[in-house]
Image (tube, rainbow over all chains, first blue to last red; front, side):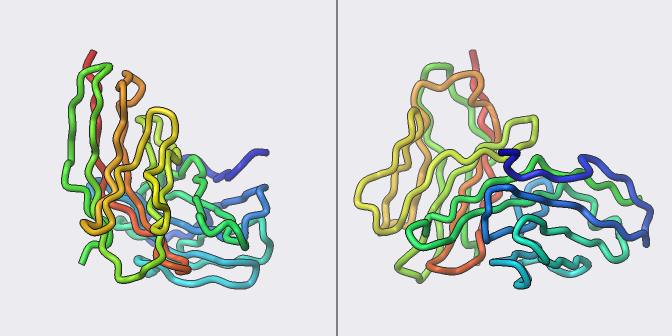
Length: 116
Length: 114
């Protein structure tokens, strides 16, 4: 199993540009999420999904869109990039089924985004 | 109010010694899960240990143990026999009840001194 994969590893954008960060998992996990990590602030939840066709907002959703058309994929779209969105972005997945209420999250390697 | 508080921005420990990383949490749910993750300088997030709120025993995974004190709402990570490879950021996290959101603390940077 590849686990959770993210592309690209690094991206530079200009203010106002849009882009999509890709995330895929091959563990058949229902739950997927996106976080951003900024110095001194830990990880903050942007959006999450509990299954195909179901998404919801986390703590810091503004400026980002998500969709979940398949169990495997959960892309994050930046609509109009701003310097404040310079961060490291992590995708994670977990299994929330019966008997698995632990819900341990497994993380992708991260995407470093720089917005100029 | 912060859901997860880690009050130690940085810690130092001598190699082969034990170290405790502090974590307190805030929830009114009776059912919740507590997690610790390690983030080495390479950047990946590595799951270390889990404690459920109804678990009567403290969780252990190899050299990692979680000192769970429910009344104090604390979930401290204890690393025994520290190794140089333990130098990393450590994050405490919580999932409330059957909720779908995870909350992370701001992390503790651990440096193991030879």
